[in-house]
Image 1 (cartoon, rainbow, N blue to C red):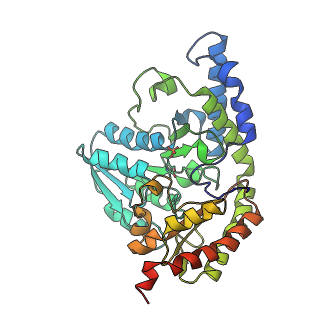
Image 2 (spheres, rainbow, N blue to C red; image 1 turned 90 degrees about the vertical axis):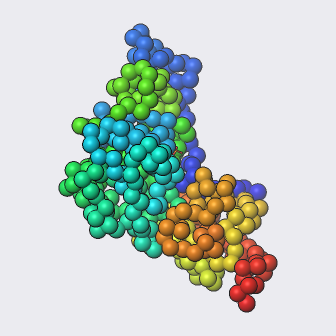
Length: 387
Ligand code: PLP
């Protein structure tokens, strides 16, 4: 059975050209970028070339890009880096639907004397700009709101939110792990000071990412060690990973707008197909302001995990939400924050599409999902208790 992969938000396959770009950097061009002889300088050149490509993808200058080990580190760096650099003020504002990389970092800081406000979201997962304005105090040092949510795909009005923070003289960070390479993302159009990226979400390798740091932003180094990354992140660089990230960024810069249009057609077909054939199903997230590749639905009276396992038996790989929470069986904090009841939050299913998704994959989901739901509902104690 040929498997159908519909979990691109968890991770993407590495593009062939990315693999090719990485290959020479394992054993041929293996030098340490800090070495002054030719092997080292070649490796350094590779890093600087990749830095230019990543910068270009998001409209930044190369010196504003700091390579990290991924999105989680970029998020940690942005929040702890600005928190510990602040001369006065210990208040951070974020939203209730951020990735664990943000929430856990904020919890850590709360245990170290910082105060964190978690902004509510509406039923579509949108942060209210007025609520942000009201939450900012003289103590506020940073606002962090994600560009698009990894579970429900809602894209936030970042430019409007960042403008409010800027007006108040507060730094603005956005976790753009799900948007860079998927929708056009420009740091100047968005007006952000800090922005997190992860290579493995845009057909690059795992374990590499970047934090965009606007020139002049006060930030303490994240990793103490050598003077790499202009003293902002010590440690010998992941040269093959960075080379791959650069290639992935170069490809994304060319292909993103067209790919987004192609996936939007599939997205709508899948949403309409599911809602049209399965009773008591609803779309989670914003109907229009959402990622082109994201479909998240709740299907009443069935557990998301049961649907996943049954889809897997049909060769279809999907998710209930974030990769991190799928092992824990806890209801999604994102869906709960959007006002869904626990049963509805447990009945969610997420399909995320990408470069190798074809129309027939969408058709196959629409063919196998309704009978799976019918079968599961026939056994459902949730449904029986309602009858
Ligand atoms: N932020 C968001 C929105 C994500 O979706 C993810 C990964 O799922 C991360 C951060 C973490 O990125 P990484 O896997 O590169 O650490």
